[in-house]
Amino acid sequence: MTVLPGIALADWRSAGQAFSFNGHGIRYWTAGQGEPLLLIHGFPTASWDWHYLWASLAERYQVIACDMLGFGDSAKPRGHAYSLLEQADLQQALLAHLGIGQPVHVLAHDYGDSVAQELLARHQNGRVQLASCVFLNGGLFPETHHPVLVQKLLLSPIGPLIGRLFSRQKLAQSFAKVFGPQTQPSERELDDFWSLIAAHNGPAVMHRLIRYMPERRVNRDRWVAAMQATAVPMRVIDGAVDPISGAHMVARYRELIPQPDTVLLEGIGHYPQTEAPDQVLAHYLQFREGLEAT
Image 1 (cartoon, rainbow, N blue to C red):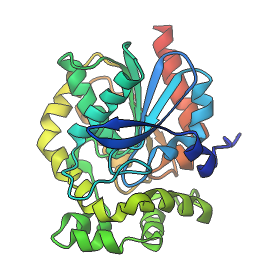
Image 2 (cartoon, rainbow, N blue to C red):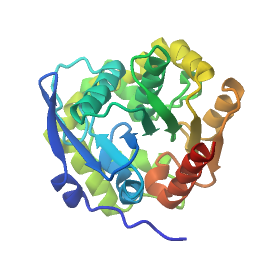
Image 3 (cartoon, rainbow, N blue to C red):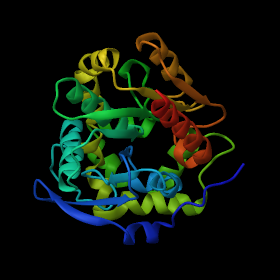
Image 4 (cartoon, helix red, strand yellow):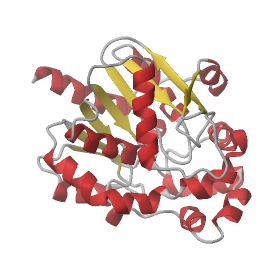
């Protein structure tokens, strides 16, 4: 099995571009030509999560990704009321900034799944045009989402303190639990993930970003209704052993979504795009080839 080479974080950062969203500086990346493919990252990391898939996808499509507000190398305003709906606004603003008017394919992970669900609901009422949507591990349904301890603590009254105390060591402990047993992140990867979280004093806003968990519950029925009603082709590619949103989430997806298209990656945890990027790429391209065939 070939292992995709990936992109060193320093090289990734140097290729980033900037635009302003509601007065905040946002870092974004784009490469390739063809149908636009929007990649939406998860919590608490950043769009570098896609670095193993980036070059292969850019050979076929125009790939687009940003570090969302409060993440990675984008602005992390203190005291801001972060919202999944605002992050969906950000994705639409980025597409407008790039002059993209045609329907967009979406590939999302974790927190990004919720942003994609909001975009799907907006597609249903004509506010954006999606061509397809693929979800990696994420809390598509609040009832199947099993947050890790640090997420629960961030949401608690001591959340600001927990955020300030969050460290590379705490990140390593959390990731050890959610990655697959044979696909644990390397020390170098942990350094790089931490560098993106720590940029612009990121831990100071983590207790504000975590408000996405109750926001998911508020929007759950509207988002699920959109997924049940939509004609937008969808697929789930999911690391099965993820304790947060693994096989149990996919089982719920199969119960709720008509004609569910799901792929379970055995032995893979919460970050399939970094744990098994070649498998994710193969299943994503198979999905897209199926769309082109129909």
